[in-house]
Image (cartoon, rainbow, N blue to C red):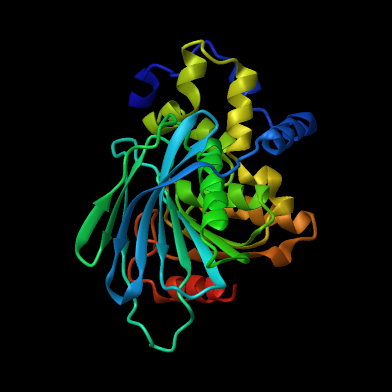
Length: 323
């Protein structure tokens, strides 16, 4: 077949070792590494402030995560205090380093729930392009490496959350939710596993086990870029590559998840629903099945799961509004 003629990307690398199930010691090492990472709200600066109609203010901010400068945006809906905080985490596209977000503001006084403070990190190697009221506003590019897409992205997002809670007194730190799609769904889960202040997490078509997905997608340029090229070029050992794969796989650390909602498309070939089943099975085995709402949508793919899908939208809205 054609597939066999394609040069094996990992030729000469011991795949049995690379993709072996994790040991307890390896998982403990990831947890210890996470705990050692302090993400203080360092070098926080407001870069740009845009006042939108109806009194909302869009803030573009910069901050430091370790040695690199990162960027994000904060939409403060009003001057009210005690507001819930929603962090929005975007997906990953190898050919696009701009995180585009379209903000739709609901009219004031419609009797609905209070709008949350929206927190949108640019994530490593990415910039923001946020459209509000037909106008697009942009940020600079976050300095960390673009392929630091999961574990490193969680660092950036958690550090931004710390900046927002420190610098925006209108926020209520007891009402934090995180939502993400695709790569963002994974990062949302990882953030919630690491930070107990996050009370609800929504993951839409998010991988839960990147050790397994990378093994099955090792000829895919995105997985190669994110997890395999440093190993292939000899810059990284198998143990180092494994640590990054495990630290990017929330299924192995789900005992600390808060209330969680996951959404998958039954026809998704990129992140099959089996990724959600694994998370569900692991939580059930630990007696934590009640933490998870797991939904699969018939006929939906990775890219169509959310389009014209009222039950999907209402489930997420109700879940986050309960914060």
